[in-house]
Length: 317
Image: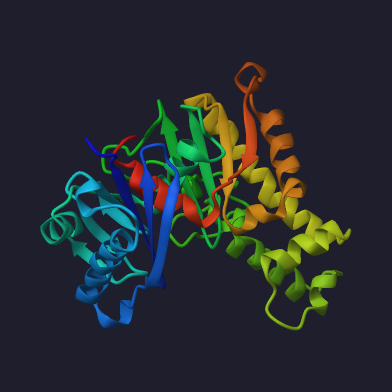
């Protein structure tokens, strides 16, 4: 029997990234094309089909060698039924994507949340390779998450497990309303959006900070750069973001006892300056026996994690 391969699709609001992956989790070939959300649902689905076929046609492999196509989607998904319930960034609502693609491609199809498949990618062939119990954070515009136990994604009864950004870890007196409608979510302080909000609040209050000298809109990178340069206001913002990540990890550790926490996303590019503070809080708030052998590391796969993890749905879910 000839070697089998898998196609992983990372379905984003701007671009659709498609990767051809072997059974060892190696990304062999990639292609990226526009999503074209403005053209409607049918166009987006047509593009998925077109890009999947294109990546195989332009590879050394045959269509018959493709064992399945997996897709990661940013939004609410009914994983069991293969339905994208709501994905605002691609304009999908109650779209039975699995059955549509199975009919068009004549291949098995699996879907999952984008953060879940990114986590699976990291555990399959990235920062968690060789480990069966990991929790992944994605620190970007929001805070996403994925939980891997026994080498498989934890989805929960309705597919919503791993929504780490919506852990209510901020005390009531400090809490603000999250985009989800609830108060005190981790996402409100530890995402890029939360960090920028705290920086803008400090400037508006008239706090003495170099951030007030920035003419263009403040970015999370600006805040980290200022903190590394010794700006006390920026240091407090970063410390607050790191503290609540570490606090959430402490709660997860005594619940799931993962061997490794993996942090990816744009905010993670702050590096050890951020990670050291997260580790400090984690060790402070977690019972010592639960911290033994546990590491907190940066993700390794970057933008490839979603494609690799989506392909891996056929071997690790």
